[in-house]
Image (cartoon, rainbow, N blue to C red; front, side, top):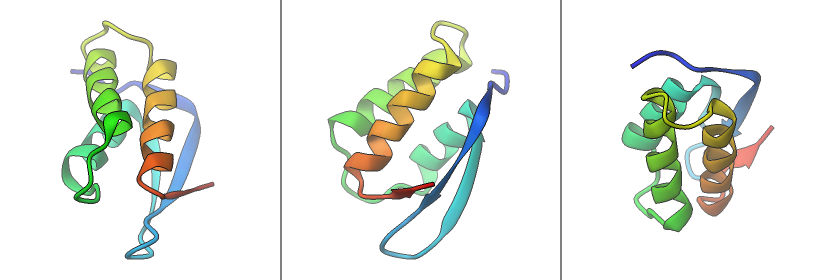
Length: 81
């Protein structure tokens, strides 16, 4: 699996912990989804997991993974910058 860089990085803040992370690649987004996501996993989370995995395998575009990740972050109440 390769890194798939986004042209515009995202800064997201976890409202519960205040942790701020910059996400620049599909790999970073997938890692964040897998390791640092809140316990609630809604439909957008599952879509982002699938789409990021597909992008890392070359079966979907990094831009699709970015949009899915943003939707999951909104669903989880992250603050996006």
